Each structure stands twice: as C-alpha cells, then as structure tokens.
Length: 321
Image 1 (cartoon, rainbow, N blue to C red):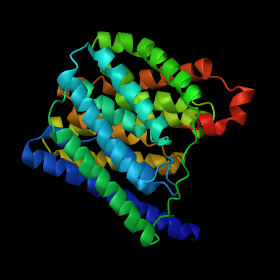
Image 2: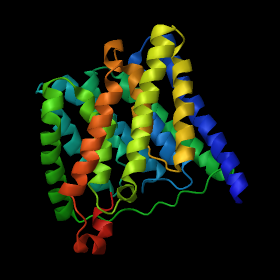
Image 3: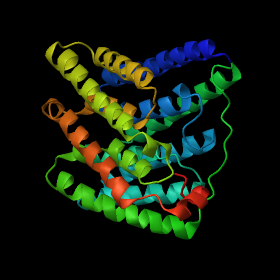
Image 4: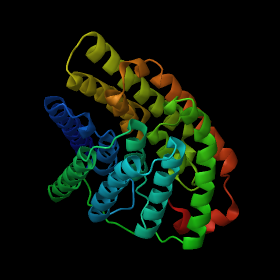
C-alpha cells in the first residue's frame, strides 16, 4: 500500500469507529439502558481497526473471550462480593492479570472492562451482553477489513510469559495500585484513578513498552481526551440538550484529529473520551482535572517504580505486556 492510500483508508476506519460508537449510544438512548454504553469500545476500535498494526498480541478468539469474560467478572464482583470498593477493584485487577498470563496475551483493555462495573455499581446483565456484542462486531469488521485490504492482516504471536515472573510482577502491581487508589476511592474522587488510567498504569509499568519513549505525547492525548469528552457532553448534551450522539461525534473528531497531529495512537484515550457520556452531570466539571492529575502522577511514578534494568532487555518476551 502506498502512503496516500493508507491515509485514505485510515480516515475510513475513523469513520467506521465513530459510526459504531454512535450506534451503541443510539441503542442505549432508545432503550433507556445506560449499561449498554461501553467506553472501552473506543479503545478496542482504535487498537484493532484504526492502528495499521494491532496494538496488542491477541487473536480474534482471545479478544472476544477475554473481553466478554472480564465484563462478566466485573458484574459478578459487584453482585456477589460485598466488600469495600477498593477490594473489589483489586479482585478485578488480579483476575485480569491472571487471565492475561494464562492466555499469553497483552490485551490490557480487559482491565477497564472488568473494573468499570465496580466504579458504576453495575449489576445488570445487560453490560456483559453489550460488551460481548461490541467485541464480536469489532473482530468481525476487523476480519472484513483485512479481507478487503483496508488494513494489514493481524498475525498473532502469543506472548511467552514465565509464570513465576508474572506472579511477582502482578503482585507488585496490585500493591502499588492499592496505594494509588486508596485516597481517590476512599474520598470518592474516582477519576484520579479512572479505569483507563489503570490500563495506562499497567502499560507504563512495563519498561519495554513503547509508550515509555513518548510520555509527553501520551499525557497530551489523555488530557485532550478528558477535556474533549467532558466538554462535549457538558456543553452540547447537558446545556444545549442535544442528543448524546452529537456530543460523541464532536469528541471523536477532536480526539482523532489529535491522533493525526501528534502522530500517536493510544487506545485508553478512547475509553477516557467516552467515559463522561455515562457520568452524572455534577461529575463532568472536575473529570478532566482529575484525569489529568491522575495521569501525570501515574506516568511519573512508573519511571521511578519500574526503571529499565539490563536484565529486562534480555527478557522482553517475559514482560511484554
């Protein structure tokens, strides 16, 4: 493919991702079921559709199973594990760590899919049904795009994790997440440690992850996503009483233009962009501030807590997550 053709079809994939998001919102509004809205769908679309090369090492079967299972575990945790929220979050995070290790994949968006029901106190089975449906659409259209040569074929190479190393890694991540989340969750200022920021924390905790080379770009994209999503919802939907779809389209355009200008794709930003669509109006004003401060703290801390060591360069396959 020449560069001009690649750019044209990438714009088409941006449009398809926006259409998918709008369809999800339309169904949610017509049915009155807010649980249908799955913010991580934007992250999956960015990683599986818009990116020239799928960002995670995962085949289509793993993506569907892990995303669906994680959303179900999140709802089951809220329904049946009656513990403080911080412990529910840690249970979900620990589950996703185990699932990623067992499946030999680095599909870390499942973390947000699992933890979001805890933040939203979601007990409805509609949420995992919606997530499973959206995941099926993502992989089906990805396969169609590959067949029509609208994006390169995803050749999955399983990650090969050392179980002992992974156990130590995720134990450390769980402990640090506990420290990070205690005050935000304890004071109900949840979005200092929003689920997509927990995904960001997991990505930056790996010294070999490419995002570690461009922290300012990632931080800029996260900030833009938080401001765009919250402002579009607040101004267009809350104040002007326009349909939620108009807010979503506006926010998506801003984020996708930012991707092109900054020349960086970061899937968790898509989830941050859509998260304001399901928040209460009184949470929208402070959402960008909380996300921005949380992102800055998480990114900076990961460089201190997870420095690059000589041995990690030799064992990239063990920590490639």
